[in-house]
Image (cartoon, rainbow, N blue to C red):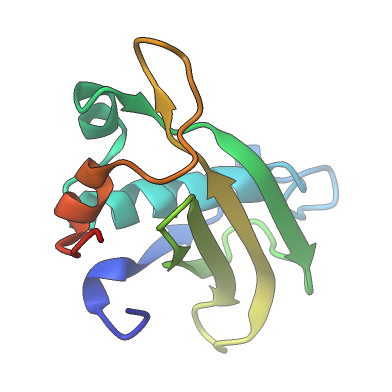
Length: 141
């Protein structure tokens, strides 16, 4: 699955001034915003973005996340944010990598884990709902 281009995306971001601290370095919490932008682009590739999730009767809250800061990212730096589906059967785990666009040097890695919750009952789904498999073009057994 990891080789299927539908399950990986790369977006480009030029770091804006409002994302940095007084030293010109991206504030640590903003990396999650970069992950979010890449995640929405990734989900859109198989037509299951957040609006489609809600319309299908499920919400997918983030229940776990991790970020590892390997190098600084600074104001006006051009970065590439890569997002890849790592798991999908019982939860949606998406891995991230941020690299400097010019040098290719990896600056940040991380992941998010989301679980399906019924929008009507509020109950947690312990297996991803069939709609996710359908949108991804995968069989659900």
